Length: 117
Image (cartoon, rainbow, N blue to C red; front, side):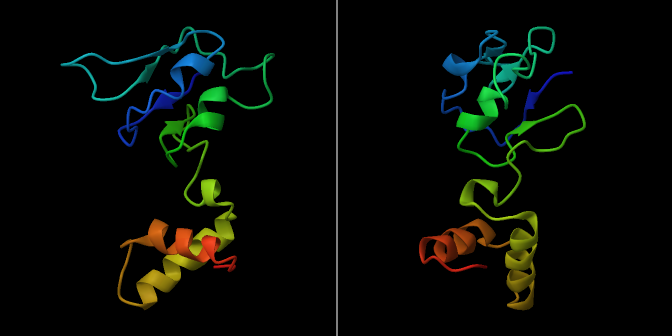
């Protein structure tokens, strides 16, 4: 059981100080261009917190995944969109001829206006 930080990490440093097990390390070149999680030290915050603290503070959707590769903050989650709402936003983009283009930006705009996508 361990989490992983993937390529979408933007190196914001938010996760490093919140890990109760000091399982997160900044990767040094030539390794990875982003942070990494030591699988042996990561407890997924079980016994300490209800949710992994790295995922709670991470500002990037999909940057932290579980052992199955599932994002702890899936697309749309940081905007407060349910998976169904997120799929609706994606489908609208495809219908408008913009598959995957600016999907997050469109969702952000809708959420800022208080609209349900």
